Length: 187
Image (cartoon, rainbow, N blue to C red):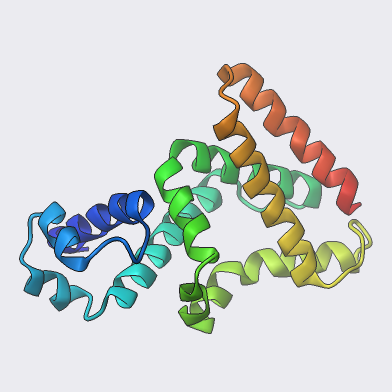
């Protein structure tokens, strides 16, 4: 990714999380990034394009982290546990990015992300969940509902950890315990 484009994305991230999508003019993003307005619009013709590109970039970063740190293994429970832990550890290490994701999924922008982009990102996980249901390892339910339950659990635990600062040892124990609670719920 070109350096100026990356500077724009980084500036936009901080400003969007601080001031919201509507409270952040593109001129402020360009100023914060140290680029001309025209340069911003060269990379992102509209503010909507910038918001969506930032979301895709962050989700790709998170996805790569989870894939690198939680490869799929034959044991479904262990795969889900590792992916769950990796997602929460990434979120704790990237609080601004995680806050942006939360803002984004609660906004009308989510509906504007290309279906192929969403499918590409979640298809392997959805297939893993469906396989677990087919094998009767986890409860049978609509796979998108199961995905929502797991995602909501991750968001909730992350928010709890942000709001209740605790030592790392206690934090890691709570994350591990919370997976056990989730596993009990879905099996």
